[in-house]
Length: 412
Image (cartoon, rainbow, N blue to C red; front, top):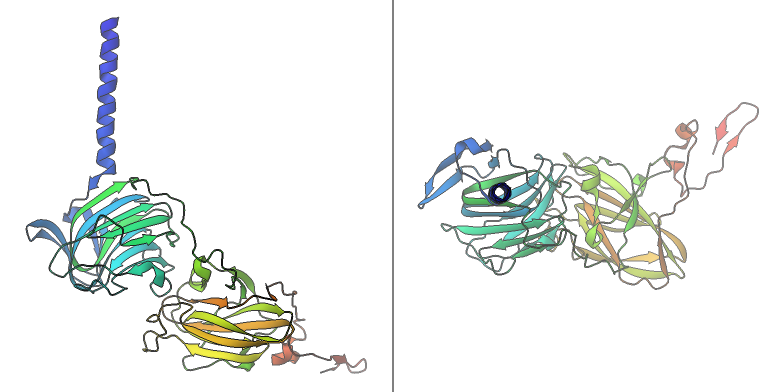
């Protein structure tokens, strides 16, 4: 009996040890750089030693190498990369080209002070958000012709990114902004990749809860708006008072994300051509006054206060008309005054986009005696009368309607 018990315990110990070894192998996996383990997209993959190290070469700047049969949620991704040219990066939690998380290096080798050398951005509805999240980029030291070691520690909502220096994070992401929670891993850019190691569920104690929003306590941000559906806006066309919404416009509520960002791309997706939406809110003041508005936007904006144009500007990266900081959205983009009357004031913003991210950030300098409100009364229009109203169907234009009892004619 005693020998049988010892035998059972021995078998259990061996089983547990083998199980632990399998678990460690699963959680600390070196991904083989062989053709059978990777799919290519928009380029060719070559597998050979590079500088004496087994490597994968992505031969095109627009190419991608996609790891087969690998699903990643949280843990650690480590790899070495050597630039050839352009951009190079790692996609993770990748569901498709439309939805992913992305960490990448720009072609800034040898310069340790340029603030856009490395960046994190989500891919949402086909859109790379690089121009919407300037606070998620920073400087880093790396060189062409040499291996750069990357370590991404990902836990739930947070990520720490290390570039060469493993003693401290190069970039800290308090909240991953993508829509995906798990997905594949892939690499992109004209580069060599080696020493790919994925440690599933090993995030070194990093909390999965999102970090603090640095603007959370700042009530100067206008966080609640109503937004219309996007409509085409032909190139070269500008907005005037004639284009203001009327009472037939459908509205829905939208609330700011972190740092006061009104994220229209998350709502409406990619703009294949120039489109415009209207945003509106009410500013209620106890007295007539002027307020300064710090305003970030992407890409073109027309601001109206009580139906009068107050501000027009453009933040066009591709055309070279870039607002500080280098075409990214920020409250550093612009600053202007709006004149308010005592009581209710309608703040209406037309916003056009056809290039990457779409949104605004609006911050008032002083809220003394100010109330922000989006509780508009429901506006309706009799569809039978709409042909008679035309552009005069605006809520701002008082209408006197008279219908003749005799001939049933309508007059305004």
